[in-house]
Amino acid sequence: MTLFTTPQINTIPSIRWDVLQAPALATPAERYQGHLPGSGVQRHSADDAYAKHGIIMEAHESGTGRRLWLAKQGNRVLAAHPKHDAARFMALALVTGA
Image (cartoon, rainbow, N blue to C red; front, side, top):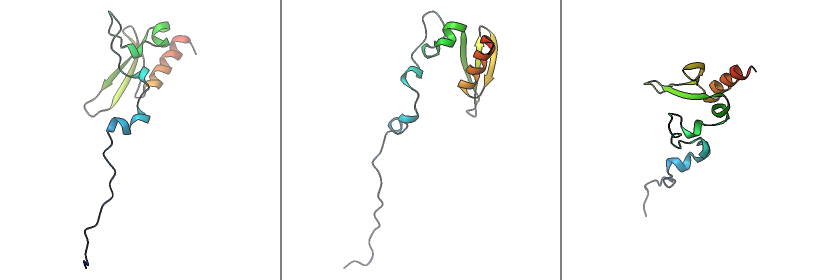
């Protein structure tokens, strides 16, 4: 008869990180899909804001991982914000006069 036993630790099987994070991932239309022919615009950025108003979103990331989104129309910066949707919304509001 053994008085002491080795404790058994219940663990879960390994789950791939991309499977675990699947609910938090962007929709397929928002993932990188390449660039439009003859331009520096990524396909996932070619939405209504780009098609109707020429708004292009640029991400600038610091060495510490902080990101700043710029909503541009040509060379002109319309709005800047750490959140993509906020910068896009501000730029659309400026362009449409909302």
